[in-house]
Amino acid sequence: MGERVYPRDTPPVSGEHPNLNPKPIIDSPPVSGGPYHRPTMSEDSSTSSKMSYPGYGGPQPGTYVVQVPKDQVYRVPPPENAHKYKLYTQRKPHRSRCRCCICATLAAILLLALLLVVAGGVFYLIYSPKAPSYSIESVQIKGVNLAKLAASSVAPTISPVFNVTVRTENSNGKIGVYYEQGSSVNIYHDGVNFCGGSSPAFYQPPKSVTVFSTELSGAGIVLSKSARDKLLTEQKKGQVPLEMDVEIPVKIEVSAVKTWTITVKVSCDVTVNALIENAKVVSWDCRIKKMEMFSASKNKKKS
Image (cartoon, rainbow, N blue to C red; front, top):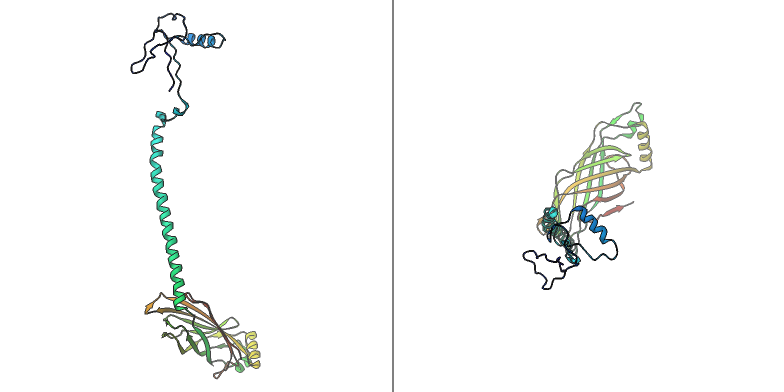
């Protein structure tokens, strides 16, 4: 802290330590009004003007020069900013707590995701799940007489009935499959829905083969002349292509524990020699379009 310089004959303020040997700044007599005279604004102006000339001895009596070290400037906020300073200092811990809470939540989410990945990896290593495979064993078709359709002069309607036998194989050693109610099976030809229905509900244990049949029916299907001509041409060649789409809700059983319901979507391209009751399956190609927990499988056979 710098020294205060007191004018001659002026006592220090209470609490201040006076210099033992005070020296006046200038040996000029005090101005009018005595040693405690306070200069007026005009006097201050004249004094400042005098101080600007070289040779002037120093400040007038009654004037104090206070020197403050630079490191002590602005250490304490001014009174008008004390309230803002208090608010800012109180917000820092609150922000720190929020930041810590967010970091902890993100860390928990990352840890949970890591645990799920590790659990999934262990599950695949132990059980090695494989998707079931599907194949078309036979197709019987009723209600479609192409010869009669060709002789008709008006656009006829048909009511086909398909009886489809499907073979499914579960090659997993420790995983069973529950086929639930609520499935849908549809057969199309050239974008026209011929018939629809559902598949039965059953349980397929590990390392097993299940064969089931489902009856699909349609009514009032209108065929245009181009569609009839195309069917006749395909039947003469002995290759009538059909598309079968299947959606089945299933549950997976792993060590006596059932999972949630999973929707399995299977698409099969089936080719028969004719739309007759004793139709022969020329080729089929079945593939799983969607099934969680399992990798997609594809089963194909051509004549």
